[in-house]
Amino acid sequence: MTYRMLFRPVCHLIAARNVTRACFAIRPSPTFYLTHVSPASCSRPITVTRLNSNYSAERHQTTMATLLSGKEVSAEIRNKLKEDIENFQDKYPKFLPCLVIVQVGDREDSNVYIRMKVKNSADIGMKAEHIKLPKSSTQADVLATVNRLNEDLTVHGIIVQLPMESEHEIDSHLVTNSIIPSKDVDGLHSENAGKLAVGDLSHCITPCTPRGCLELIKKSGVPVSGKTAVVLGRSKIVGAPMSNLLLWNHATVTVCHSKTVDLPAVVRTADILVVAIGRPEFVKSDWIKPGAVVVDCGINSIPDETKKSGKRLVGDVDFCGAKEVASWITPVPGGVGPMTVAMLLQNTVESAKKFAPKQFES
Image (cartoon, rainbow, N blue to C red):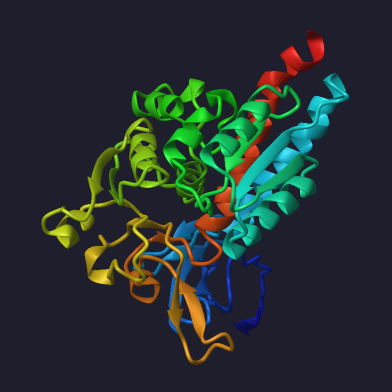
């Protein structure tokens, strides 16, 4: 990170976070400005924050957006989970949260995601086991594996890595519904989805990506209650549970999909916009309400001759344009992705705590 300072006789020390490059201008009055600059793919600044003489930060009147860094927030969550596990072990010395990931086949993208989950689990002192079933596995084989894990008291969280790569037809909905709801740390079981839909948040496991999105929105400091929220996408994993989560946090929610009429006009009503449709840079800057909080769940690969790999990752939102209009925005990569993994760990640790009395006091 490079700092360029224009100073008068007195200089102040300011800590800059989430910044690729920063410029401080110290003026005769005790007010100065910190400019946040976007990632290298966008050349223009993305925020100006006014800092007064007692170092309290106020949002400067600007249409540039501040990054909501999933990397930083997820690191905070992992540190807190590590501490929680250690504290819980004071009461139950043998307490060890355990996540089991069931994979069918050998998709390389799945292998990458699983390695990330296993590493992050180890970093917080949690056990993660990877069960890899061959492509020849049938639906009965997968169900038998899940049923065995359901009965194992030392296992607190089970996920089936999707998509499953099998030579046989496997009903993924049936498989995810075969996981007992208390171990369904992906939050995909119909019972967990149903409880979330009716607002029974204290008795269900929330899907990881929506839960991570809500944490990022809260980090912006923008209250969800009373805001107009638009969720673009209605998938079982992200869109539908995200809309429920925002609704029960007292936002007024609209869900958009492929049949929505005049989509840009509907999106433009959003104080909080969550996009999860899998279409690269689909949402344009003129769709976004000035000052909106934008959470981009998409991760898409597009050609880029300037990159050594010949491609780069982008979200479902045109970041370079959107950052000029929104107040807060998640980057891609480094936004929602790290939060999804962090929420998986948190769901597993919370499940393990609930199992502990039965596991260690019976």
